[in-house]
Image (tube, rainbow, N blue to C red; front, side, top):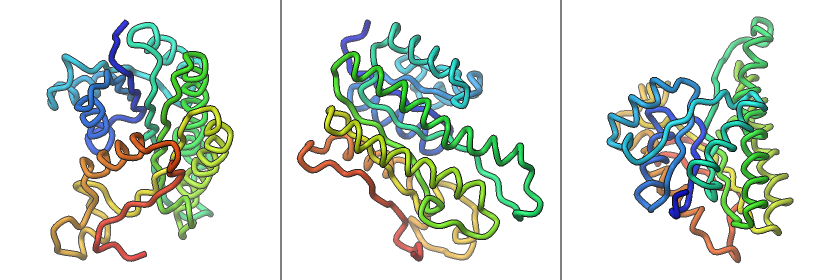
Length: 238
């Protein structure tokens, strides 16, 4: 078993997810990178020069048995994670009269229920290993207000925010720092409405800059723990 501290990032894609893997790895962590599609994940890690050091794991984060098996495997191969970032999510928009209930359920299962499953497994591992730790949940503006046609995303992010608050109040006194980060704006190569309308440098959030903030939250002294913060580009209205 590796003597290096272990981090787990759930929801690793080409934006923030892989930036978190890179940042945690650069700080001396062995990182378990988790995504549903193992082939795409391994290719992404290879492209970023991470394949030889960091380990890829496939998991459907909405499946309780799959999440339990994931943490069991990671703990046996690397050790119990002391830093866990939940970045998985699904995104659909549509009129409330036209949304497919199955699509809405899947959005919630991945973005919210999966956060519960990963958070539960991480807490159990940290408490059993008596290592303390940090859990970071990727939120969004939709967790503060529900916009028209965004009901599935708002339901999901409101729930994830509530989960993080509840976990922070329960686990903080036990030495586990739980924080929720609200991402207010497009990330990286985002091509949404604001990105199309504004012609300015840094009009979207840099994945690497977000990852740096996640790291700084993890490094906070326990006398000044943040439970929630928000990040947005300088041109974003709010």
